[in-house]
Each structure stands twice: as C-alpha cells, then as structure tokens.
Amino acid sequence: MTMYISATFKELTRKRVFLVTLILTCVFLVLFIVGVRELAGMTGQQPEAPVERLKNSMLLMVLGLLFAQFLAAFFVLFSTMGIVTGEQENGLLLAVAARPLPRWKLYLAKWLGHAVWIALYSAALFSAIVWTIHSISGLPILPEDLLRGFLLFVWMPLLLLTLTMLCSVYLPMLGTGICGALLYGIALFSGLVEGVSSEGQTPPLIEKFVLLIGLLVPTDSIYRRSLFELLGGSDLVGLTQLYMGPFSVPSVPSNAFLVYTAGYMALLLWLGCRAFSRKDL
Image 1 (tube, rainbow, N blue to C red):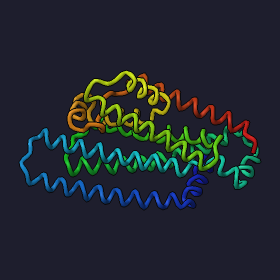
Image 2: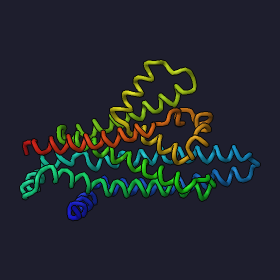
Image 3: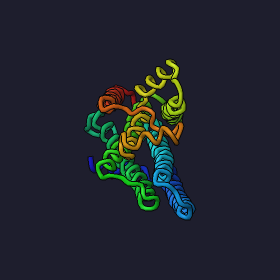
Image 4: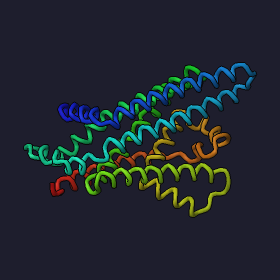
C-alpha cells in the first residue's frame, strides 16, 4: 500500500491541477489572514459587547470553512475524475492491472492513495483557518470540540472521493467531473435552502427535498455537523441561526446519521470494487 500511496503522490504532482490548487490555496489563505487582521483591527478600535465580538468571530469562522470546503471538494473532483476511465483511455490502467493483484485491491489502493493526500490537504486548510480565527479574533475553542470538528471536516472530502471514484468506473473523465460537481452543488444548495427556510415555517416539500438530498449526497450535512461541533455545539449554535441566515446550522445531523454516512461510504467502496472487478479494460 505504501508503494501506491507514493505513486499516487507522484501522479498528483505531475498534474497541473495540483500545482494550480496549491497556488490558489496559498493565495486564499494569505488574503484570508490579511482580511481577518484588518477586520480585527477595525473592530478593535470600537467598543463592542462580548456577544458582538463573538458573533463576528463565528461569522468569520463559518465563511472561512465554507470556502475551505469548496477548495477541498474541487481538489477531490479535479484530481480524481479520471482515476479509472482516464487511465483506461490512455492505456495506463491496463498495464497496472496486468500485475498479479486482484482488481478490488487495486481499486482500494487507488482510493487509499488519494485519500491520504486529500486528508492531509483538508487538514492543512482546516488548521490554517481555525488557527487564524482563534489567534486573531479570539474565538474560544475547546480541544475536544476542535478534534470532533476536524475529523468531520476531513470526513467530507473522503466521502466525495468515494462517490467520485464510483462515478469514474462508469462515466468518461469529463462526465465524472460534471456529475461529481453537480452532486456536490445540489447538496450545498439544499443546505442553503434549509438555512433560508429555517427563518420561517418550512414547507413540507422543502423538508422532503432536503432530507432526500441529504441521504443521497450527505456531504453538506457532514460539513454542518462539523461546524456544530467546532462552535461548541448547542451552546453557540443558536447564534448562527440568529445572525448568519443561509450559512447557519438550522438542523444538526444526529449520531445515527453519522453512522449512516459510514455505512453509505462503505457501500460506495464495495460497489466501486465490484464494478471495477467486472469492468472491461
């Protein structure tokens, strides 16, 4: 497995999208840090109530992690959309599959290789955003809340990776990228709709739509549970509903839902291994 992880890293570094992602990530982090410093300097000159400072810090945290999950999701999509079909088209997959190794193990090795680097990238993004807000804006974060929020934030792109790899078995390279982006976008849209509708009485049709999308593509639900844990759970989440509108956490996925996402991810991996084993190379 170590060989495949190393080979995956070399493969990623040869892609231009990897270099572009790193450059854009660095630009985003620099602009974010500068922006937070400027906002902290402006608010520091004005007498503010503790609740107002807490609200501003939470808003910066939510917006920072929102764009961070954008970057993590698109890193997954652009780096893995040709992981199966793309290698099949250029003949690389046939050469690799010729080795005396079951195809399902090859599929899992590819998943694990990409998962390691995607998790590291997501962890670096999460750490940079949280450290910036905590050190500059002074948002209080407990270690146990930080750990739970971190694990859930990293879990989201890994679930998207599993879904994208399954699509790559059946769809061409461009089709995989479009399908993955649309599924991620629909999940994000449903979360925004839920945040807007939470300010009033939610129509039953909207509730059913949000529930269905959350079950089919639970990436946004995991992200919102990550925010819930990071912001101190029920102690502070009420403030997000009052001040943040569509970016709030109107409903929190339960622990049973997290167990469902683990089973959902295992099912996608099994389906991918099964489909890859039967695929005509």
